[in-house]
Image (cartoon, rainbow, N blue to C red; front, side, top):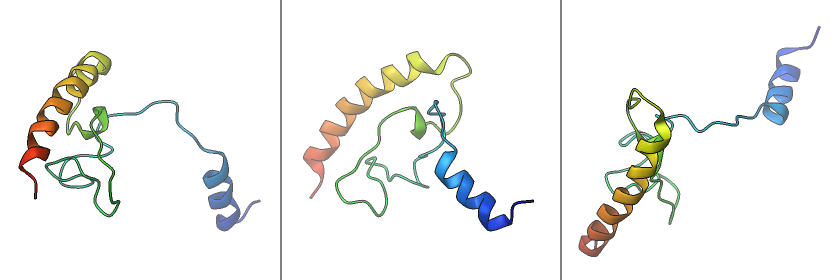
Length: 82
């Protein structure tokens, strides 16, 4: 029977996901209102992971639209940042 440490090591080295679900980088918890990732200089996230809730349908069209609109919004906001 493997120990807890062995199981943790196994999970860290072998577990992967093929999907990028919503809610992984929600605004306020992982990114700020300008989509800057807390604690990581120069990184912003604009994709479905910033959705607080599921759009209730296939997420791809919503995430794709958000990518396009989010970039437009962010370009305007960056002009205003110090």
